[in-house]
Length: 156
Image (cartoon, helix red, strand yellow):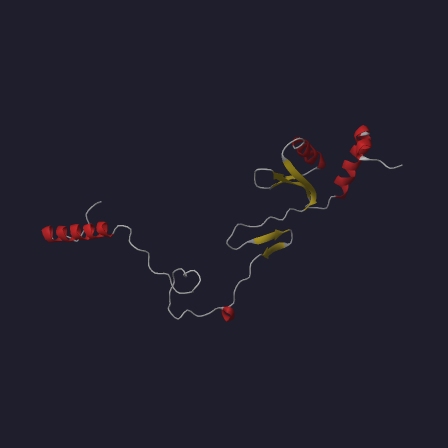
């Protein structure tokens, strides 16, 4: 005789047995997870030590605007960037390719700034937003140093 999900709801002992089997067969380091994908927000993962806690969380999502994906396993997060790693129970795995000197092109200009989009040439220095303000400061500094011989810039 086959037992369906509806039959399990009517037989609490069977439900408890399934929970015990899950707990007994869970490998070291494994947890119960649920990937929650809200209709209007970013997906997230919630983790639980036991199946009862997972079930309680799933019940909270009944009749809500979410998709849920329960999982039994080991959560392996990804580190923050710019160099991201997959963190496994056995060590970190890089999710990037580190260039080698042999694959890099030498820069004949020595430029350390950004690169112009598309052409690979150095970007020009940014334009001063208020050239008159800089000129005014320089003139004030010269006037101050002429008056008393100091070389201190005036307070702004």
